[in-house]
Length: 322
Image (cartoon, rainbow, N blue to C red; front, side, top):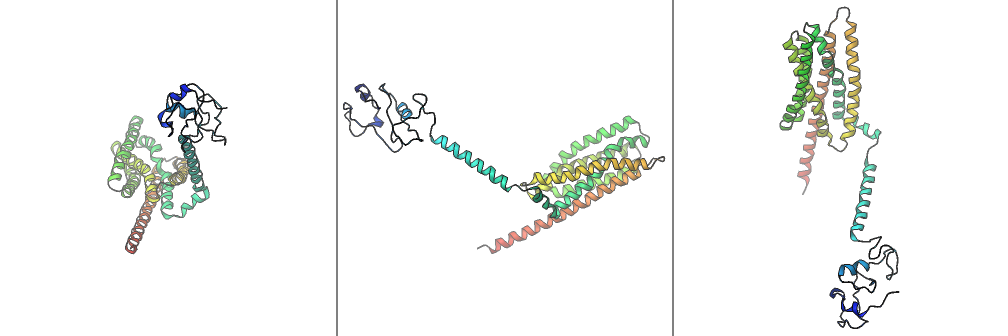
């Protein structure tokens, strides 16, 4: 039952809810029932002194068709608000769920991802990673023992190795900045060829502290930069949409090669006993790095050709457009 309004309440009826009957002394005065607050009910005989209080108790339960019923709960509050904010949150949540479902549906499967190997650019980069990774750790693992082999003290060998590792830190930063300002493709090619040169030429002639230190600095500086620039090359060729899958496949091939390279070098070195010689080890690492440099060069060729084809297609579309 809806309690009848008392005279004390009628005297306090707020202006926004008054109707065209201005005589508040009549118990039959009407309360505005607009479309936004349709079916609102005045609660209690205690005077309501503000519009916010009247609005708080006049919301109708959206789950029921009875306009005279309020949602059960704490007096003066609705336990299940049908406000615009709630509706908006629900709609936003639904849109987020739909977007996630669409993203999951568009995500390529494993077999769809490996089809990228048909692309000559990706195949060239993967073969470069595979070939170069075979010899990547050989200088790092055998540089100190080689220093002892040519007559240097273990302390000097450790010093050469430490300075060389510091050069890798510098090379990643400096050559990365150069790649941003010049060209990532040219910088990547320069780094991989300098890495091959340091292993094939400088290591083979390193017979003193100075030449071995030069070889170590050159190798680590350019090899470290090469490792950092390979993901940039992938993004430059294919974009960033599926870059995680592509880099994962490439590094999987490189990881297998790294796992094979160092034990292979140790086996080759042991095969030279009793006349120990590092020449076969240096040749193995050099062939690995040169092969990687050749594949990087082939990637640069295919990448440049794809860019030219895209430029020609853009010009044709521009000329044909009205």
